[in-house]
Length: 236
Length: 163
Image (cartoon, rainbow over all chains, first blue to last red; front, side, top):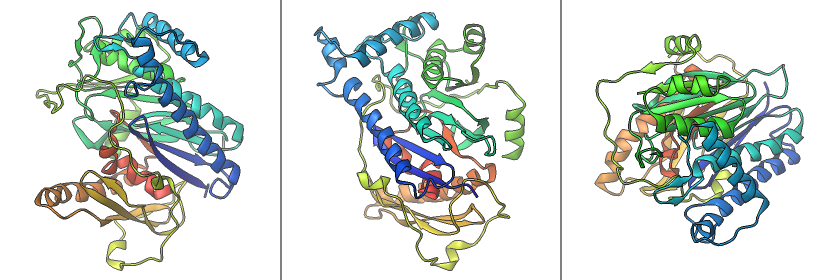
């Protein structure tokens, strides 16, 4: 039976679960150190980009202060790209001020998960409050099985997606109420209950899930045309 | 669950139309994800198996079958997590690599409100843990959990089984 070990920490106001799978992961100190490193990358992103910390760059940007940081430049460029790729359905310029949260989470989790490739023969599953980066390092081990939650009954599953290497992201209002803004109307999007997107990159799966949720009915057709390499499941 | 899983696998995408919408209780939550309550760092500490105790809790449900990536057989206690309602601790029994039983060993019971919450949440946690094993789920994708919501989530039960 393959060794597997899980760690959970609460960062960015949400539970983050890391599962590693492979020979010796339960005892290897290098594995434990890599897990610690994953959470450190996420804490760094939280400190930089939190909309809740007045000392974050988000608030500096909102105050109009100059910000010069390589990670901030990277995120700002990705925000512009995301707005273009989604026909404006993802937009960090919200009524409450500049807010790249919808992109930062996927970006940070993907970045943190990427550090785990250095472990070699170790699979990972990094789940940040429902948005997941996955990797299977050996063809001898099975794909990860991802349960998709039913937004109408959070204790039930709509089904299962099997993923070897890639990402699954869900946007919905079941946990935190309506918080995804339709950027074209400036109002909370309420046309759908949840959108799940899977594909190669968590950053883009997360952006597309948020954009599709804001788009509302018709989001499936829209995303298939915009990003055919991503699979979408909509609950309305 | 098997029927649903099979149908899901065969379908590129699914549209579920509902005739009734559930009204959210948080109409003013316009902010994006952010800190709510932080749980103790101790929740990241690996758990060692305790000696199997309380035989009544270890009654297998269904027929256990081998699955990959599971821990050793035995009874495991999660670390107690502080919730707004008080400490919650979960015990899970692994047999043949599958969760065969789940129960809470510590729940808040000081006020009437707590009792109401527990009466609803605890059986759900046990049920969903067993259900997840039926579907052999490694992880769960859904709307972003709050740290409070996580305590009663399927994901927390899966995490506890592999700490």
